[in-house]
Length: 114
Length: 114
View 1 (cartoon, rainbow over the protein chains, first blue to last red):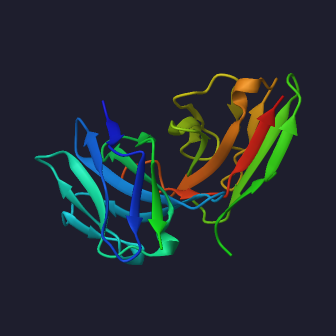
View 2: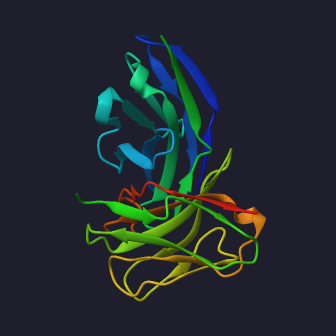
């Protein structure tokens, strides 16, 4: 069975410093992995996705994530945080062979200090 | 503008009342989903539909029903609302139900049951 663990419920960084949001997953088969961002009182927006192609995935707004099968991780990074990055981030796992089975992490709230 | 719309934006409802949350997409996506979002729990799937005329149960279906009469619309009905159904509800769609397809989310409906 699949599951997702977001290791930090809150992360606080200063503007201009790197961002690291951690995600570990478990999956029985070949996983698809997604990162979504949710700004306050908004819906979720896709940042990036991994579906068995290149292990380093680049997304929107300068975010990227690396799929590490040996570590069952899919951590989200950004070299330099911007105030507009303050939001909640969700890691999601699904299996390529399954339908309608998306498992959401509990979310990480990113705070960016000026 | 292509996307997903949800109505109402927010609602306060007396316990025991019937309520239908509306969701419409114009992307011609085959799959649609209803999630609820509760603090610290991420998103949990209520019901889904892979194509018009078919629906399926998600992780937390009790107390909710859905229908899919056509491709664009996927209403969620609470037959007799209870306070534990107080939540933010998100509708989503994807090209198909296969796990590698990203989901597109609506802006959400904030429901309070008193």
